Amino acid sequence: MSHLITSSCRGLLTGCLLTTLSPIAISAQAPETWPDSIDYHTVYYGVEAQQAVSSGDHTPFWLLNNRQGLSSIEKTNGYLRLQACKLAPRATREHPWTWGAGADIVGAYNFSSSFYVHQLYGEVGYRAFMLTVGSKEYSSPVANPRLSSGDILYSGNAIPIPQIKLWMPDYLDIPGLNHWIGVKGYISYGMFTDDNWQRDFTPFEGRRTRHVKFHSKGAFMRIGDPQRHPLWFEGGFEMAAQFGGETIWGDSVRKQPSSLKDWFKIFFPSNGGDDATSSDKKNTLGNHLGEWNASLTWRPNNDWRIRAYFEHYFEDQSMMFMEYKWKDMLLGIEIDLPKNPVVSTFVYEYLHTKDQAGPLLWDKTPNVPEQVSGADNYYNHEFYTGWQHWGMGIGNPLLISPIYNDDKILQFRHNRVIGHHWGWEGQPLTDLRYRVLLSYTRSWGTYNEPLTRIATNFNTLLELTYTPHQLKGWSATLAGATDGGSMIGHSAGLMLTIRKVGSLFTF
Image 1 (spheres, rainbow, N blue to C red):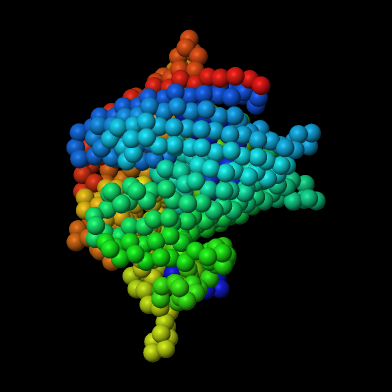
Image 2 (cartoon, rainbow, N blue to C red; image 1 turned 90 degrees about the vertical axis):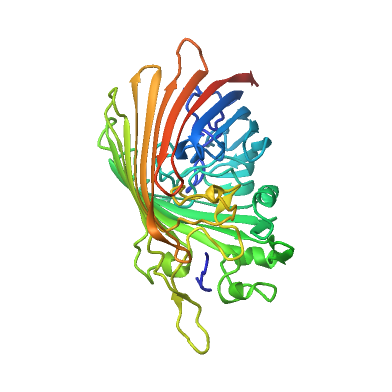
């Protein structure tokens, strides 16, 4: 619920496609089975087949979440995926222009859709800047995409949102500071694509939306030179918004403002005009949310790397700045260990979203001229279906996504949580890698709908990936996962994924 007070590749296609690192808060997710040597004049392909079977009510949590929406809550599901891409190299002084493109289509059963274009994009870069148009996978560079529970704002949990994005792939050093300080940023506008899915999923009297637009922006800074010094800091902020479109309850349709001036009011968060709702007239047009994040990395040599990171989520100016204490956070540590056959990387995260600036919300009136900006109701909103796409939360999935709701109402029912998460991976054999995820979460529900008893959620994943060196480009991944607790129930399941990647042609 946004109540902002006025004045305030390397790899892209998961499992096969590549692209450059993305901007700031969101970076392209690297494939697991791509050749070490990349030819920027080659078009690559990927073919991927996946099958999942489960007991219980749902596909287990870590077989469903943080998979860029390529998953299904149904107990038995599968897909066939075809991908192709041309990688966009980094620009250089000699070659300031660069370009890339990708396509990714999926045919599936027991998914939200039986056929869809998962990714389709083109991009062109000049020197420090890149313009990307289309639908493309992203995940957070703050949180490890394989081992983290997920970034609070953009976790890579939902289907990509088509958008036009202007961004800087790398930090741009500030002249005259000997590479000590670098900056980068991005801005994008796009549109959500789940109109028909919402219509089919939501009951007639339930709230749904259509033609909703998307906006995001961010800025980051790096202090320190990782090439010359073992310690460096990175930090910045991101903001996102849902705006425009229509809100529908049964036969009632409410058109939300989306004129050209409203696009500027979304970029510079401002009050809504005469055609806005009374809430947006008092506060800010649209649904705004964002995060501050920071990380400190220590790499004394090529064997060790330790990184501590912090994310603070906000939905209004009071929590964006310091009007209230910052009690809510994602706090994590990531450790890369010297080469060994047991553990290569370890992650621990602590998630706290229980505070939300307290339980009270009051917009000041002439009779009671006090502003109390609490009860932020994370990921939910009065007129939009919240921070979700195709039923999957765009932020951290431990705040359980609306697709789990038995009554099909599109809202987050577990946004006041305290969670602990562990993840580690290793490579015991040359051709064999593994990954383990463990999560334990307690939920108090929401301030509007508190639980009478604390609910719990315990989730596990063990994943093995075999990449035979005799069969170039082939890999197989077998994953087993379990769920326990009262938040989403008990389940156990297996998922098998077969991949083949290679080159189509070189030009």
